[in-house]
Image (spheres, rainbow, N blue to C red):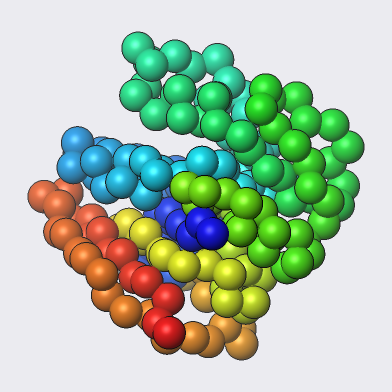
Length: 181
């Protein structure tokens, strides 16, 4: 059985909107290493429709020379949770239908290396509610946005254990939490 590893860029107040707010802080190589750690052992990618539709044009034409993460995003099987998307246009993609915790649980069980999730806030909130997320890899930026979709929605609860953390010179804090038993 694999683990579901969620990676999010978020503001101090928990907003996980489109990550344009991160641009002012730059991207340090150690941040890429932390993301690679979350992706590295994953044998599949799980995405909500909106994130899939943002990632497909951004990643599908990139090569390893453009970005070291490109082979992972292009070559790894992608499972798209959507009740409205009818056709997957990015290679190695499968639409699995609307959110169903049993389907997500089956994909998790079948993924020997686990599943990587980036963005996909609606999907992540639903999976956290059903205790399907095993690891949270959060990059917390020193900015308060005030409005926007938040990672932890109303009614979200649960206990997590700090597994690791690292502060970067650009003010970003990386924290990894594992689901508490």
